[in-house]
Amino acid sequence: MNSSRKIDLVKLVDNGPLSWFQVRVIGLCVFIALIEGFDTQLIGFVAPVIIDEWGLSKTMFGSVFSASLFGLMIGASILGRAGDKIGRKNLLLCSFAMVGLFTLLTAYADNISELIVYRFLTGLALGGTIPNAITLVSEYAPKRFRAVSITIMLCGFPLGGMIGGIFIAPLIASSGWRPAFWIGGAMPLVLSVFLFFLLPESIRFLSSNSTKNNQTSQLLSRIDKTYFPRENDSFIIDKIEKNNARFVDIFSEGRFIGTMLIWGLFITNLLMLHLMMSWLPTILTEAGITLDKAIIATSMFSAGGIVSGVVIGRVIDRSSPYWILFVTYVFAALVAIFLSLSGNSFALIIVLVFCAGMGILGPQLAINALAANFYPSAIRSTGVGAALSAGRIGAITGPLIGGVMLGLGLSASNIFLMLIFPASICAGLIILLGINSRRRTV
Image (cartoon, rainbow, N blue to C red; front, side, top):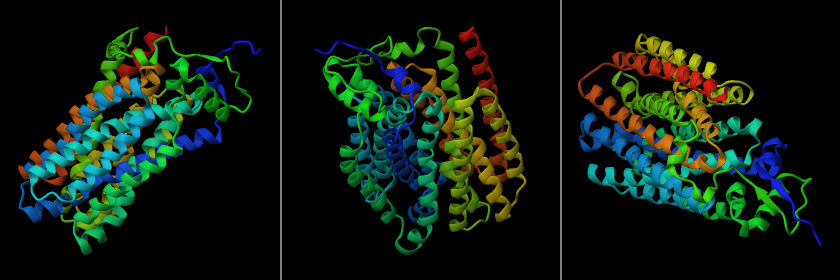
């Protein structure tokens, strides 16, 4: 008769090596993020074409960008928490398929009202994808690889936008804007079927349910080859049971101030990010750059974010995250000044937009990992989802502000110069978050 064992699941995963099985899970989440990034960025690439085709004002079109982000805010709050209740995998794949469906329907929009509705529903579904993908990666990656694993996964979003930027311009020129959404919608619908068989459920979620101990044991044996399952094995997890996770828990045990600062950081950084991601092609075309070159330049923003995000994520794994994020935000403020002085030199704009991606998009990828590390596993999906939901206030406001500034006739130079203010606020919030973290550990 086998004796009963209590396995410290968190300790075993956190202190173990990074197995090929864990790499596969992370890789599949990267692939999901890549497709989602392509779908999300499409509307920004085609915005100048739709505005001209339908005779819309830029202020009016800002509501299209914000509708998607408003949906994401609601989805991240509701569906992010649902992952703690019903499991990461099922919710992640359902949300992924819904993103595909509503992206496909976007191709059939004939007026701005329909476009707003479809983008809102796409954002709503996307809100169930991001928090649960982050959580799935964070719960399979060992602690010393967690931040960089999350950052690599999130790099799929700008990578998808970058690939889209490279290939979308000739497609728009030859076939118009609608076929781009046909492609963007079909991919998640088809791939969600394959991912159902390839992607495992969260091992920590399974371990919170004693009736699923056998599934937990089998997954654990694929992570750690030195672990051999026994029939009576049980698993030790965090103090707060996953299935009883409550929203108020993200404020408890001294987390209130830290949570508020994280929310402020998400709000301000996402304001900058979505102002740039939504309007950058249009801003550059207004400055005299051709649409194909403007799309390529926007792709360089994504490329800069990928490089910066990976570097920052690795630093976070090895040392304190606060000094590197502070330096990066100061760098973003300096780049904003240089962008305002760049004129219409395409070569210079390419370099500076790449640097802007390093200073704005890179930190956003990293602070997702910072938020995941801030909360214990039992409430991690709730905490990350709430931070993303709060951040959508800035994400929704950013495109609206950009539309108003363009509608008022502000030059590209003046719009770029405005980025100094949110970049400086982010730098200040990081300092306060670092001070708060130090006090909590004393």
